[in-house]
Image (tube, rainbow, N blue to C red; front, side, top):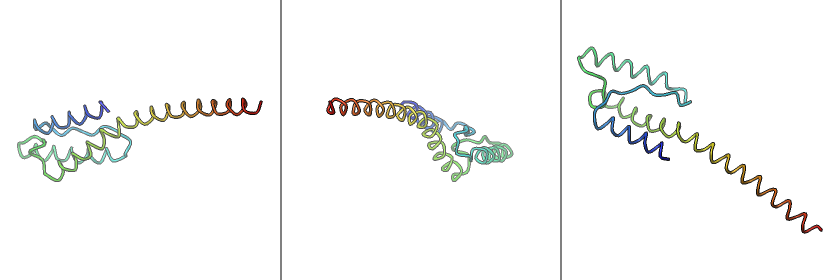
Length: 110
């Protein structure tokens, strides 16, 4: 959870300080190449107009969708690690619980 909060805090900082829109990391959704191509096109257009592709300069719809896509990416990248950890703990707990139940039945049979 701390990593997700950190990623969202970084996103908030980038917005408030009008940073350049950065390429999306590969988070397994499969649309990163399309997003990064759109961002590259925006960079080229803004550069031709003498500006830099940033939060307050780029087209509103692109920035709005990019914002939600970055939130999705932050959660997806960090949540998969958290989910795997929780699954590992649950599986180990479940096996320990099953062994305890089997032992208790053996005691009752004797």
